[in-house]
Image (cartoon, helix red, strand yellow):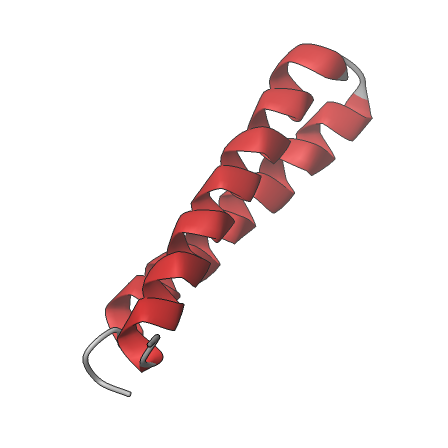
Length: 59
């Protein structure tokens, strides 16, 4: 059974994967201004994943 820490761990992992995907899209697929937007949103996903990771064990 999944408890709160397991859910936060999976959420952190998924956010990191999506963040890497967005940064990769910004770096390799879009060379215009849109690439900067994808990369900045990917960095935002990393920040949220960091918060999820910090919440593990405290919730």
